[in-house]
Image (cartoon, rainbow, N blue to C red; front, side, top):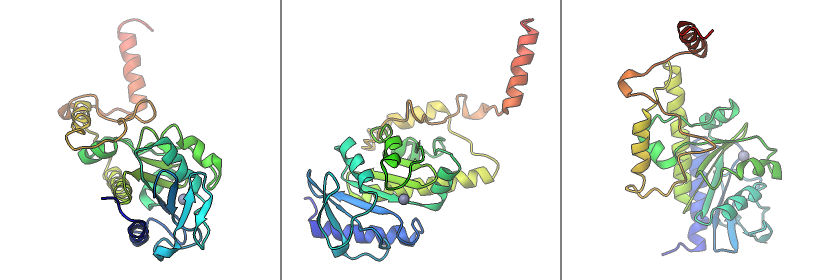
Length: 258
Ligand SMILES: [Zn+2]
């Protein structure tokens, strides 16, 4: 049974409180939206803390971003949400926030594409990065467009993250997975470097998606292939770029090629 508009307004209020309490937004950052039907979207207002909204604060927009109903002004990122709905008919809800660890990766120019945790490989494959664009303008959206059909969660360079799903809570949980994964990846790096899963294990996980009912987009080709180890788990080889060049040099010299 689909939720009523009143219930969806309350869901946005509740998810706004969660993202605020989790520290994924500061001040009036972030925005949330949900489809009401094929012609209308319910979205958060601009200039309001996402932790302190009321159900009546929400705005109803048409699919061009024009306000139909609401006493406040709609989010400045409505066009980004509408781009997701346009490119993904299967998506009914979008959550955008600035969770600090995932956004740290986005500020460092680092995608979340290492195959470290089985549940993340299954749920998201990887989280690619859309190039920077000025917030609230078409430049923000253009680099995201090739990625939206293929992934359910994106990093936005020097900005934040956006996740989307078939309903509001599924979009929210994806954001939670992204931030949780970013924290774990960071700790692994601090402890000396993440050990990625062997490629054959990643392939098994991706194949198991249908068993878990995951309708996620592809693992990544060609934008953001999941980084996995190409050798068995027991015989990982770690070499630096310089060591690799030396090894190639030695091999060429041994064969008398150089
Ligand atoms: Zn933002």
